[in-house]
Length: 401
Ligand code: AMP
Image 1: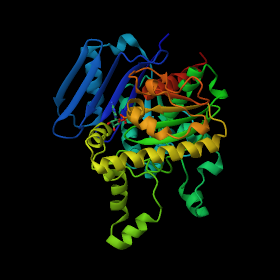
Image 2 (image 1 turned 120 degrees about the vertical axis):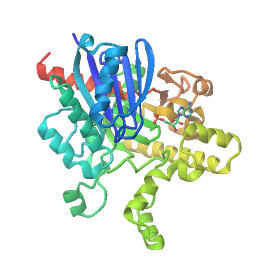
Image 3 (image 1 turned 135 degrees about the vertical axis):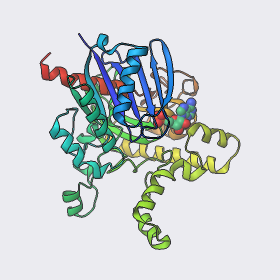
Image 4 (image 1 turned 180 degrees about the vertical axis):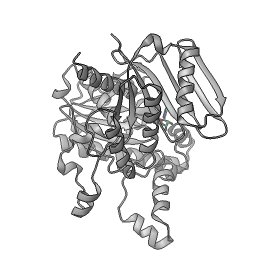
């Protein structure tokens, strides 16, 4: 039985790939190709024999995928020997159309193309990855796994913005939510750690990476999430503002004569931790804060305050909470953020165990006290594994195996 999936995440000038065993999550090989289309590209391939790095001109995404195939041939494992069962593509925006992983055909490509206005930076690159993989692996089923799909279970009161009907009906203005593969994976892991079925637990997931989002997952279904029409809304992120008064752009446009594009750029790329402290990498921010940098101290406080506010809000949305789960770069590695974000929530039944919180580990683990009513977990996210499972699950169900 062939359980391997080649997972592809194509960005505008990058291509990440990972060969994943969908049944175990083990990845015998993975790679990253950067600076596609620039004079000097970079390719890192990690396989059974170690890691290899090359620099060379990689003009197109097709050249990038060919380089990946060559690297499998040179450094292993041989793609012919592992026999891939499917190719799984990460696609950022599936709009209201895609609530589940989807087998790619021309009609799906047309539908994802129609969604480009909602994700102008991401969907075109994801589509390019799909087109190239279809050309180079015509015999394999290609499956699109959407970042938005897990949140398609949001009920209308959670996804509806209180804006004019024509915006909502004609222009798709609503909450979609993102990081869905991560929220799905992590909430299932929380259920596993609790020893219960996912349909039997309520979880608040805090995905804190470069991008940050929270979700409320009730009985295995996402019922609230912090990102919206785009990944700009919600928590404070590395370079994104998260929530602000929606009147701010118009105010700045009148006051400074900034265009919509300039304001959008600043909210996406010059805000968040970077806007507050001049630094978007959390490790560097932590170092500055430890050295007494005031901006870094404020940035940390704003970041954690926003998380705590969402935990409270999602607690109210769910009514009963079985677990709060931290994941992604900051969530998995910063005990300071975890402690500050949950401080003072003991009356809600959330009690951290300090020793467990600061203990280093790469495993999924409990960091709450044994008698904390709500369990708090750290779960390393694994979006590639989730994409592989979903892609292979779909292909198998089609074949009836
Ligand atoms: P991600 O998007 O999940 O890769 O997360 C990236 C973020 O995680 C960056 O802000 C990193 O600085 C942060 N991060 C990674 N490792 C650590 C660490 N050991 N301690 C604190 N933050 C970390």
